[in-house]
Image (cartoon, rainbow, N blue to C red; front, side, top):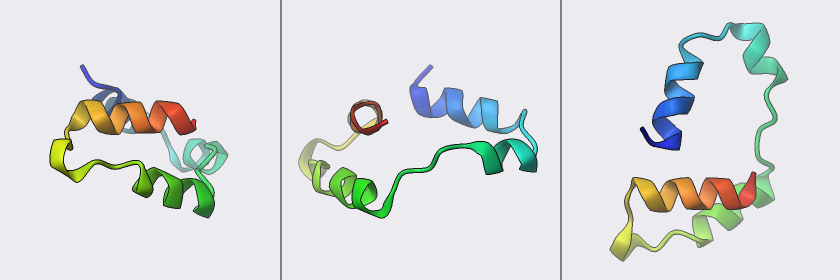
Length: 55
């Protein structure tokens, strides 16, 4: 199970209050994540690595 799948599974078990307490990436972090994407070899493992690096 990938990190993304785990997050989705956990998401279904949360409520709105839980979502408000989550720490979301800043605008700068989102931009940096986008720059880290290699579109020629883009897959779920790459996404998980980028997210883990920034969070």
